[in-house]
Amino acid sequence: MNILVTGGAGFIGRWVVKRLLEDNHSVWILDDLSNGRRENIKEFLSNNNLKEFIHGDIKNRELLKDLFNNKFDICYHLGASINVQDSIDDPETTFNNDVIGTFNILEECRKHNTKVVFMSTCMVYDRADNEEGINEIHPIKPTSPYAGSKISGENMVLSYWHAYKLPTVVIRPFNTYGPFQKTGGEGGVVAIFIKRNLEGETLNIYGEGTQTRDLLYVEDCARFVVEAGYSYKVNGEIINAGLGRDITINDLAKLIAKDEKQIKHVPHIHPQSEIEKLLCDYSKAKKLLDWEPRFTLEEGIKNTERWIEENPDLM
Image (cartoon, rainbow, N blue to C red; front, top):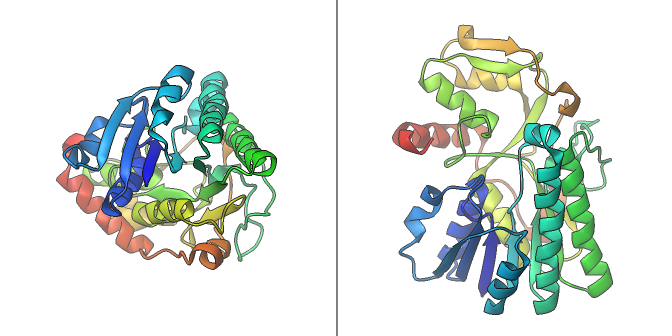
């Protein structure tokens, strides 16, 4: 197939591209590099099936119009502003990228009948209120403009399924981590903790550290994203993916730190955006896609730590 991946030079995007190339598809990457990095896709540039890397913006309608002349079968739409804190400080940028940008993608996909896989987030949910976890009909609670923009994007994506029968699917992966994730302010908690631990620095925890996260290893996430594109069974659906196990940030820090004295609690920057308990119920993905995670948290942390040690220049 001919496939477009927006945000394909990002952390999850490069793993999605890797999998699509391994499946022998022709792949185009569109990324403005505001969050992604050329280094993430360097190893694919010699692959004949990577047709083009376009350094461009999903808000550029003319660019999209030309790009879609390639007659894509699937568009994996991962391009977005993804930082919760940034969205609170600058909601306009997040809205323009995550809502207007998504609308632009949808319009081109509608013209060419291209399936849309829309990358949403677990951050749209209210906290988990039971031990079964969060399923797709769990209440939503947009506690940040990032979450609000993603919900807006989701609704637009699903409206194109109902109004035009354009094949679309909304996917909500839980907190994803692994190799190629940034270890600075925009990175995930696992990558940040591992990097700071390797450098003998303190592991700073916002608030009391009792908040929990369901941590999904990136290769499991990429497999889920790709399979959602391949399957007609999920068209018009919202699908979760996660490990199905949550862990407090305190316990995560203890798992990574060499010495508990390294762990320090600091005031939360944006406490209003904190979700106290995130735990995924991925039974719908199991039923419709036959998907379930293959990596344990401990295996994933070990793989990530090894990669960070071996690639200090990519941090």
